[in-house]
Length: 208
Image (cartoon, rainbow, N blue to C red; front, side):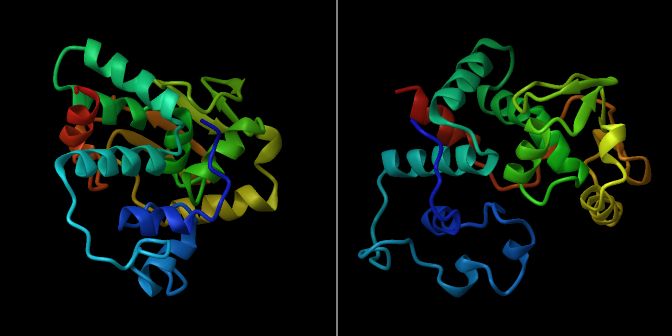
């Protein structure tokens, strides 16, 4: 399945919740979901009763789209989460949180997951002092993510650092916005994720 390239605001409307795909726009009055809360399409405003399968699929799509992951990638994460000890759903969410592009987003150096992924792809970040360009790389406790020295003087990253200084980082990250670095204090736990996921529905969708 190819990556979605259409209007991302349609995705928020389709899932009926803000996925924060357009950064600051999502918290402003310009948010498409705030102006028109119905699903896109000719029959979007129809009051449809969702069956069990539909609820499971919508929750899977919401989770996948929030993190900006393709279906095949998402299935791979689910299968790996199922092999681990503990609750599969919690393992899945915590694994997604450990992606490098998500860590950059949680640092505040990206207004959306998409922007954070692009910055990683363009080589603006280092992991433990080494340049990385793989957004899907999974971080470990003790890892240090930082903006590359050559990128720190750019207007873009100075602006991002100012924004990051005014944000509250998750407790598993020690963010030093002025130094443009973040240390992973511990692996993220399910309770550290404040977005409204029902991961059990995702597990039920793939367990059929």
